[in-house]
Image 1 (tube, rainbow, N blue to C red):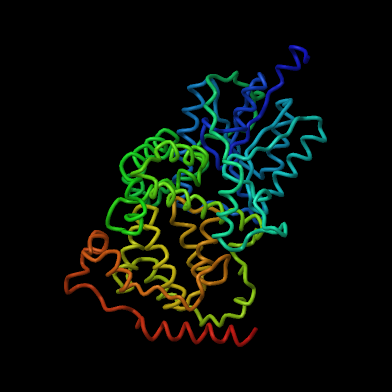
Image 2: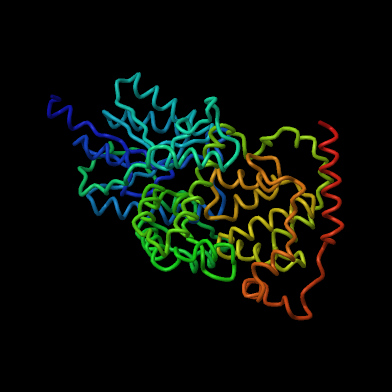
Length: 463
């Protein structure tokens, strides 16, 4: 048994993209240790190649950290904010606090895994307990493999294997109370506002404030509302951008205000005869998120490098900045594309069906490299994460895992007629659409489709 003095050495909980107190295995482990608990978030813009969140995501992060700090205060702890390179900052914290243990929930990007492994090795070499937990995926990447022991590259057999695996664990409760640890006087903490996460000159976040309330409590409110009101019709209405038929949980999962385990089991609890079809469809969307993260684990450079390397020879024309700007600002003269891009700029999200259409238009009608679109979404989406964002861009481009073939080109006019036939969605975001003020398309859809197919043929011939 440890001495009373030994038991007063703190346990550090390192928060990252798990900004919740319920179903947080790292926080639970610290609470169960009986030690004083120091909860810390490190804002790292110094580690080379570590991708910093985009502007919209930073807005969300600021408010989610504020909500987390309030939740921790309610159970007797506080949130310590630090700034610097993660590896050295954590080493300094563990030394200066004479910590006995450090706990965190796993990340799956290449740079993030290298950081975490370095911190774990250094902590254990110093005699500390250092433990990571699976918290943000239903299935850890190394547990779902093909019969040959390799990663899946196609979604359907991947999801079939997930459903055949042991059921995801039940979510755990939030700690009732924590014994707060303390930092030495003069330790270099920062205030939330000092991180500079919010836009100021100009403050462009008015639409985000109107659309969202970040934080764990609001996340649970949204989950309950979706399951009660929208689950039964989810399969039918999730593709219709003019109705409120999606879960709107993507930023909650991205920042870990909800865990996928909470979402999975809450959906099962709501499942009955009337909701069974919607529940299965919704859980398959959670499966697509899992597939993206498992792909990131295997391809950590997914944001910049084609998974199918033959696409490296794709003959992208010289970039025309005016065409890219027209797409970014929703001024292409193509109604569904413009509506989606304006929704994104205003609210920080875009309906999933429309995301596919806008991405296809950029890549296959404007013939602009998918990486330009991925970067724009990274900067403007509140739910942009290191797996889903590049994974889905590569899927549309044809260069990724289980990708739509390059010759599959979403026709934005046919998509509008099929999924927004009454024009409710387009009219909301492009009010000038059915007036004489709306411009002609900046490109001819038929001609540019043919140009894209010709470029694809050049790639095939080069193999």
